[in-house]
Amino acid sequence: MAGQEQLKSCVIDKNLCSGCGMCVGLCPYIKTFRDRVKVIHPCGQKDGTCYSTCPKTFWDIDGMDDFVFQGPRSDQALGVYKGIFFSRAAGEKAGGAQYGGTATSLMAFALDSGMVEGAVLAGGSALDPRPVYAGTALEVMAGAGSKYTAVPTLAAFNQAVGINGGRLGLVGRPCQVEAVRKMQQGCHSEAHGNRERAVGLTIGLFCFWSLTPEFYDFLAEKTKGEVITRVDIPVEGLTVTTPAGANTWPVDQIRKYIKDSCSACIDCTSEWADISVGSTESDPQYNTLVVRTVAGQRLVERAAEKGVIEIKPYPEERLPILRKAALNKKMRVIQGEGGKMPGYLKLSDQYRAEIIRQWEVLQK
Ligand SMILES: Cc1cc2nc3c(=O)[nH]c(=O)nc-3n(C[C@H](O)[C@H](O)[C@H](O)COP(=O)(O)OP(=O)(O)OC[C@H]3O[C@@H](n4cnc5c(N)ncnc54)[C@H](O)[C@@H]3O)c2cc1C
Image (cartoon, rainbow, N blue to C red):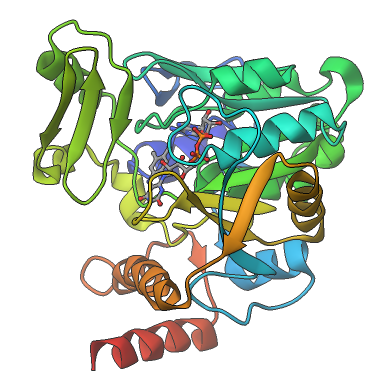
């Protein structure tokens, strides 16, 4: 049994909190302030949903593969998937879409086709992003575009559960998909009712790290009050677009803002989502689309048939590059600080040995 006290001492005080927002809104005593999660008053409960659904209290890779996919993974780097594609919005593309607009188009289609009744995502602007509940495709479109801080989207999920009585969609970072999967496993106390069936679709983003709120100050200083229309972090560096044009700064200038919790995360492709969406790293008009579950596959097939998205084969030569990036992230966590892996991670000796073996093969 563990609750708020352990959440605070094991996760928040150790800077392991990813700002997913799952504990916010479950409890009147946990709030966010500029994306940071704070306990504002002890609740005194010995057993708490805030602890049990937190993705950083306990994470069992094999157990979660079994729960979501009913079986083990064959690809240790990328997780379980049915197919990988390049994709983009083929119908109406959201004005602020980050790349191909796949994430927005698929969630808007899921709403229009009745797969979900509403969606939670990260709306607002680059300097003021916030969790948003979207009840229409237009509201989903308004949330397009990447905000590189840790928007606690799941706080909106907790408020939206029960609205219209239907199932919700989530667009979120890997840690947010993980929190939802823990909730679906029934990791909540009786006080928070039966929420396992509250989620109809998870669209997970690729994410190697997100940034602390100090990044807002950096952005504000660099853009001097201009309206920010786009932020991107390609290999060339942090690129910020305003009506006056685009400016790029070396990534090294923002590394100090990377959240500590991201260094303890092994999942950069949202391995437990129905569908994962990332950049292609080669063509900004397209996305990399990873289809993982049967529900995800059905949605993508129907969206392609209806002309909502366009998909094409993933270039064979890019797969080793994507796998290497994912293995690299896992290796850094597995080797950890002084060879010590973060305590919340449970992975089998077999899984660990396989990651190391595959990484060593790539180094030859
Ligand atoms: C913090 C962060 C780091 C990322 N790092 C990488 C990376 O290293 N490599 C890579 O290939 N891709 C990365 N991505 C994903 C990439 O930026 C795009 O979100 C993804 O490719 C989908 O593109 P799209 O054109 O379909 O997006 P869109 O159609 O514009 O949809 C983007 C969706 O993401 C939601 N969103 C935006 N910001 C956040 C946030 N902070 N938290 C939760 N949801 C959010 C929006 O509400 C929207 O629904 C990252 C995204 C984020 C938020």
